[in-house]
Amino acid sequence: MTYLFLYVVGIVLIWWIYRVGWVEALKTVIKVLVPSILIILFNIKAGRLLFKNPLVGLLSALPTSIFIYRGSLPVVASINNWIDTKRSKYEESKDVIDTDSIPLDD
Image (cartoon, rainbow, N blue to C red):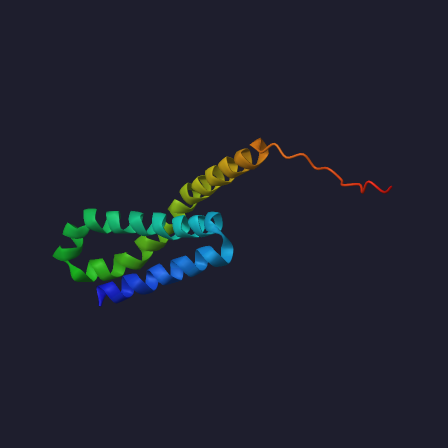
């Protein structure tokens, strides 16, 4: 079942990259992964508290996830801005000369 899930996620990622481009897909993946990783790390650290009293765990899971998600938005924005600046520097560094072609008959 896990392999089926990973297969579907892989197909969806490939389709998304094809649809919007690799830079926008990378930004979207970062927008999802950074808060998720922070929430998982917090739950691992707070696991002792959650296992001692399940009611406290149930009541605190959603609010802490919302706070961690909102707290991670500046980190996600800074990573996405860094990607945009690297991309713009790369596009500016290309030496392209625009010319007009004129037929020899004129």
